[in-house]
Image 1 (cartoon, rainbow, N blue to C red):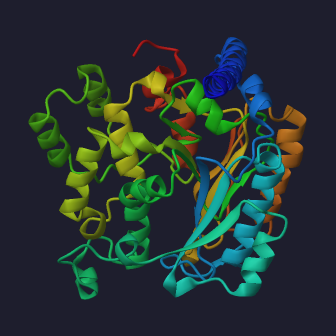
Image 2 (image 1 turned 180 degrees about the vertical axis):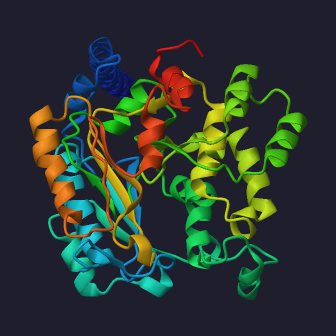
Length: 417
């Protein structure tokens, strides 16, 4: 009898314990569900509210990453660079400035991300450099690229470079293009990341970004985002793309194919981009990337990551899946290394963020700051407009009345896709 009562008591206690566990699970579900509904109701298309609710996330457990591929010595192709006063511009000074502005205008406000500084074995930062760059930047890590991430594809040899197109571009430069076009997606996915933002060591954020960029991409079903459009001679061979589309007739809509073929030179200036990694790892994007990689044209033709990104994104993503970010001021400016234009803007410039500056601030603070860099160099002509300061490549493409206009209007919803 006592044994029977004891068994019944144990059973009763077990049931009570199970009920308590179920209550906790139910409470947590209802709490999360209610929070999700509230967040979704307030955040659709609203960048500010999206940022507010994620502002306190920890960087220690994140799927979002900002990446740099740094050169701490002189550039492998452009060599030593100089400002308008003929002062050397080191890779370290550029990177430190870029990180300062990145933290000031973004990461300090939205710290839930990692920052990876990639480099190759020939340009390893010293312990002192790592210490300088890591100070008060807990999200920052250094990664060396070697092995399959930084080597010539099978069948190519270093001595072949003399026969490749535009042979002045180093093998390291071509490794860089392959990294950002082909290899980075697998590497980051293996690390558990889902979204990536690229910065170059000379990419500068000149105004505060007031929302979490990664959350904006997720919550609005965006797969790729860029800051500057550019006209670029697409050196992804037409024949290769056409053959791929013929072999895979249903991978892209007729509208996207027609838009791409209307002007293949409209491209994304991808020294800054933000992307859903899975897009590049999944068909049809992954299939075309594999064709491009196996052709080895990144090395033999100097087919760049800019052209590859632009081809894949324009063919396989609909306009509503692409974000043309225009609400923060961004600079990426390549300086000429030739004697005739040494130290002057050659590509890119500074794109004004909508609402980021008053006209007074744009012309007399930002504009003056840029102009002062080149004031003592008689070779430099730096055109300054209402929305852009710098070279013609990005300036012309950014205008809605330019040859890029029809595509930019599609992305902005000004014209039907």
